[in-house]
Length: 447
Image (cartoon, rainbow, N blue to C red; front, side):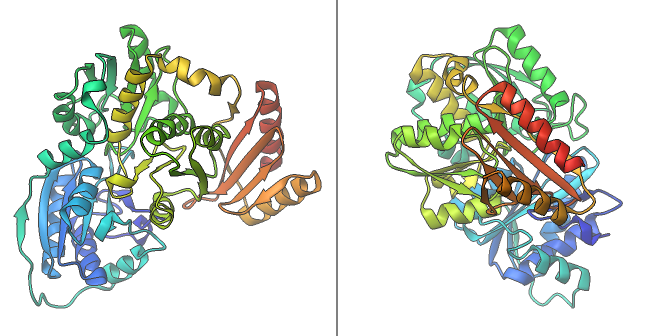
């Protein structure tokens, strides 16, 4: 079973059993190898109930197409990136549906160098081959297990000075996803007091969905951080390639403020470095980068665009509002472990609480958060918004959707890749201004 709609802008994702099953997984594995002709690939999987058989099907398909396949087992997605990038392999597939609910399956696919395969970089070709079917197996590749754990732990710890870490009290919510498997060997090397919650891998996600972007899934980490009097709270999504932070007061930290803080820490070790941020981000990000001596570069949203731009610009770091954080020295790939470690070192070296480090941002920049609205005609609505704000003197950019900037407020509106939706992110320099402008733009979108 392989519904062509499971091929998204950045990955493969669909409901297991009704949109995607082992037969479809085999076809994707085989089509991937036929499309790109890798000699050797890594395949890993997340903790979902369907993932063991789905991963086995991918491995069989890839081997039947002639590639040598290394099965790296139950891993976080970034460990596939590590296996490919540091292991010199020609590509990799992680069988995961990331933060989606338990009934989903999917895949994140990369080429040599951990370069992503998305809708504009070969995924549609894989779709067409997979749906067309295959001839006889000509030369089957070998299948072997590969243990990448020791190398991965050393790699992520190389981003910090472990000796600088103070015995901070940290609550970690793994949401029964891959962080519960991936973090323990890293935590064993750190002097922090880790309060580990929902670390047992369980693909039914019995405690809450592994998507910290939804407020209802953040309630636990916020309450637990406050109850424990912790210095920091950290929540992970299902495949653990994104981490979300809660400060010492229990306040959730927006991804753009995290990007600004991490950028400052990275620039302390990489003076004059270039840093990418996405079009949705707060003004706090480019201003913090410039203040720390770096070069801020705005990018389109999405890991495929960020990773390509990082290579082109030789950027040292990139961050997205959605909590994807990319590091040059991690094959320009996103990782959920490295930003956690960098944050620990930042707090340890500063001697300040996270709320104190965030205070300059919270006092000056006021964010709407992302507001999604279904619209009948995306293109017509974007044109309406553009015409209105051009007439009012707004500075316009079409880098990704529509961005409009005034001296004291700005916004970005982007169409969804999969639905007739517009996604609004707005910022102003006062709470009252933010609320008034937010209501104004939302009203126009919904009119």
